[in-house]
Length: 129
Image (cartoon, rainbow, N blue to C red; front, top):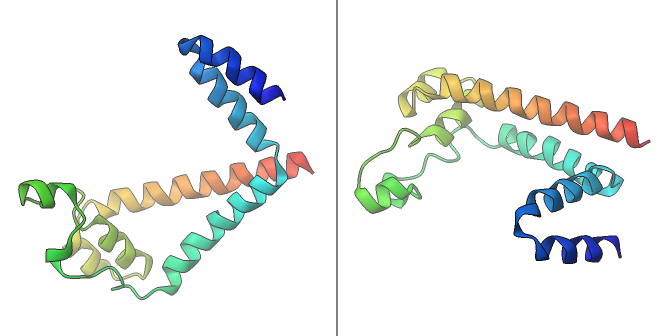
C-alpha cells in the first residue's frame, strides 16, 4: 500500500518523520468517518461539561493528580484551573476566581481554540462533501 511504501522510505531517513505525519494528517482530513467522529467529540465533550454540576471536580486536596503537589508538595500555577474553568462554565465567577485567577485568561483562550477547531472541522466536512 501507499502507507507501507512511504513508511519504509521514511524509516530509512530519520530526518523525514515530519513528512510522514504531515501526509497522515492530510489523509485523516480527507476521511469523512474521522471528521464526523472528530465533530462528535468537539460537540460531546463541552456538552458533558455543561451538564455536569459546577462542583463536579471539587474533590479533596489530598487526592490531587498534580505532579507538583505529588513530588514537591507545592501548588503550581495551574493548580485549581480545571475546577475554576468548570465553575466559569456554570457562571460561578466567585468560586472560579477562588480556585485560580488565571481562569479569566485561560478559559477564553480555550473557548477560542475550541471554536476554531469546530469551524475548521466543519469547513473540512463541507469541502469533502
